[in-house]
Length: 432
Image 1 (spheres, rainbow, N blue to C red):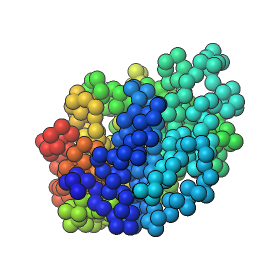
Image 2: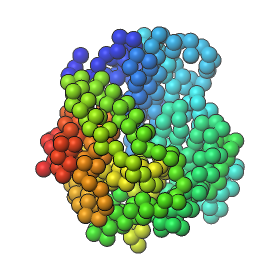
Image 3: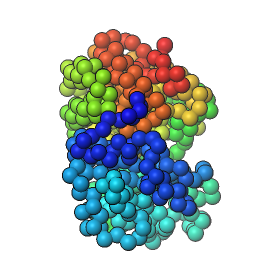
């Protein structure tokens, strides 16, 4: 087995081929059909001894991606599942040599509306689009989580006009109601823009959402550094959220959920990187010891493409599904670690992200309350989360990247005033 391969699982022996390079010919031959480009692993969801879901992304030129998803279960149950599907569209195959069920986007066993939605929107949603562009819309897949949901961009005149989120059957209505309450509250109480539901279609479990004003942080950082005014807007906006205790939340107590997620993340990382098991044990104990009873409304999933800045200096936030009560230091810790340790397409983007992360953290630490141990615990939790990203998405040099983030998480717990726990995404050296 190559040094950068994930460990084998004797209960699912085919995984060693399905998540290793080169990918199996049976998979590549299907992925090479017209309309798909070269396959690469986009995400792995794995529970040892139980099941694995491997999503492969296929890009054709610069067009939106499409996906193949392989499902493997312990106990050789994929063939039985395939027979129960009675699927004849050609979007699902059973690969006997791997005992794997493979489905091709847009077919999804748990999102039956997806096949039709990628072609055209239901009438109720079409009625909510700008009539000046009637018939002039294009739908492009933006994000897809097999079995959970999908996001489609609505493009008009070459620009993103809105987006559509698809949910499992019967789940859209409560989410839409909460999203509207939260978006209205953020706008009225915190002066922060958020996606507002324009229309709900319960027949297709689809939600049409307005686009947030401005540009996403990752788009801005790709070309330039953030201004002082923009740094101030991000810090001040998030602090307004943390002070507004009446904001509706999705989860009332994120701290307990965070600890369970940290343990699940550490379990996955210890399996993928057994040589880091002892360090991971110390890190998880350290994070648990630094948990606090302080809990305020928080985004809980901040990253560069979830934060928007408008020309007038106003702040916008998207993807509010995880909005919850949490330690007010969790949001800034998550954002700054992701800025320096997530993959960037260009060296300029990485330099600008490092600069922004350092300035954001310096301003937070000078204006926000919180002792150093709490900063260390939140930075360590964020570092493990990004380490998990590198493993699940099989990024280049994922093993070195994840190992360094785990080591840096331990360093943050020991010296919480240390630099942000990041990595040099070109040379994999620790940040100075």
